[in-house]
Length: 255
Image 1: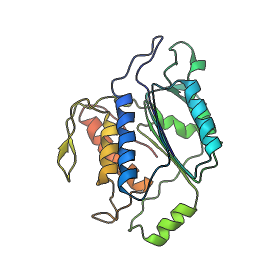
Image 2: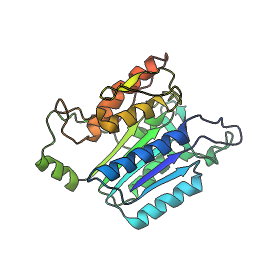
Image 3: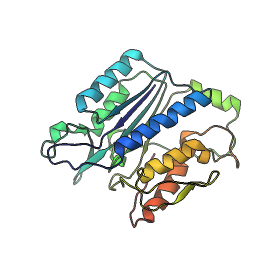
C-alpha cells in the first residue's frame, strides 16, 4: 500500500505552500506508472491532498486494519521544530487544520513514529519532504546506512523481501529548512535530458521523481533494474544538495 499526503493550504496564521499537493499528486502518478509497468504492483495508492490530522489518524487506522506486508508513506508540507537545551529537538508535521498558535494541533514526530510502530508491516519506507524533517531521528534510535557496493542478485533480493526493513528518508536535516520550489532549472534526467519547469516541484521532489525514473539505479554501473533505499538516498543526498546550493541554500537529506 502507499499513503501519500500533501498539504499546502493552511489556516490561522500558517503560510500556504506552493508545491506540496502538486508534489504528492505527481508522486502518486509515478507510483501508478511503476505499478502498471513492472511486477511491483500496488494494491492501493491513496492520495490525500490537504489532509487534516484526524484524516491522517483515520488513514493509519485503516492501514492497521488492512495489515499490508509493505507500506510506503509520503508527506509533503510544513514541518516545524522546537530546540531545547540538553533535551534535543522535537519535530512536528503540520496538517491542514494546524494553527500557528496551538502546538496541540501539530503532529509530533514521536506520534508519527508511534503510528508507524503500531503497524505489522514487514517493510515500511517513509519519505518526509518538509522543513526539519531530520528531527524524526530524535523519535527513534540512530540508523546505519549501508552502501551496497555490488549488484543486487536474486538471492539477496529474496532475502531483502524476507527480512524486515523499516526506513525513513528525510528531505532535510534536523536544523534545516526545506525549499518548497526549485528555481535552479537544473537538468536531472540525463538519459532523456528532461529539464523541469521552474517552480513545478520542490527540489527534493524533482530529485525523487528523477531517481525513481531510473537515475538512482546506481549499482553496478549502468544499473541492475532495482533501486534499493540506500541507492535512493545516495542519489537524493547529492542531487538535493546541488539543487539547494544553486539557490544559495543548504539542504541535506537524511536516512
